[in-house]
Image (cartoon, rainbow, N blue to C red):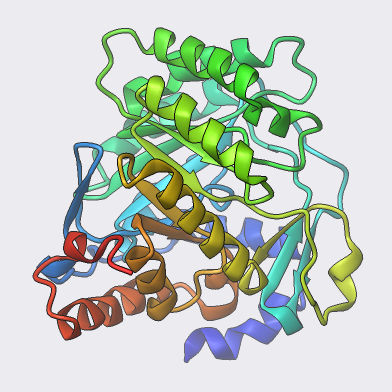
Length: 345
């Protein structure tokens, strides 16, 4: 209710400024302990224990400043980043556009962040404040890099020691040419290099892919990921397609997230589930606004889910509220734990 009262004032601010103030607030405002989760939501994925399957997607906490606060807001895990080896400003502003009528956002940020070296000491301090929350670190390549694979290798070496899991992000539409790394040959070279850089590290590596894929792409990605022993696939990021939208901002360039992405992301999850035969864990992202959306994604094959845009429209209590309702849905259908519901439709 408080967020609904504040939302008109927040939405009166330019979107990126509002986001910056949100991060600042989470860094300074006192917060209590994380809400207790129903044990039916506890699950284990890639050897990691999650108190609930609802995570904050990367892009919200680009510099790894507030993962501990996100856990105390009710998220089971927080994925920070995307972090690149060197700091970069990203694309020119304005670069975030609310599509209020569609409960969506278009962004063309371009991996703006202060770089991995800036984040390292801060994330070391954060580790002790995460409690039972899981920390994911999302890595990418600098826009002007002459060797993007080398950038991911640097990211793996820098960030894996601090991460519960590491995500190789090749799914952003806002870094020119980045999605070409999803092509089979390039992907095989990239993942071989990253896994080689991991050495004896036991940190699981996840791969994040785009929703804008052809069937042959999906088969190739699954094949390479399984050969390289990738621990999970994150399906998906923003889309460059434009479904039927109402907002005047619909023509802005960039990646579309939020409610209109739901059907496409759900279909891609089903496609990856079919292609993989359930042999690799999947994480469902895109258009998840309600507990029913999260549960639909889980029943379709996701072991975990993530959200971000929904919090912009529904407020900071979304994870805690979604967890409560999700537990009711799991129990309603007779499952003793949420893992039993994965891939059951």
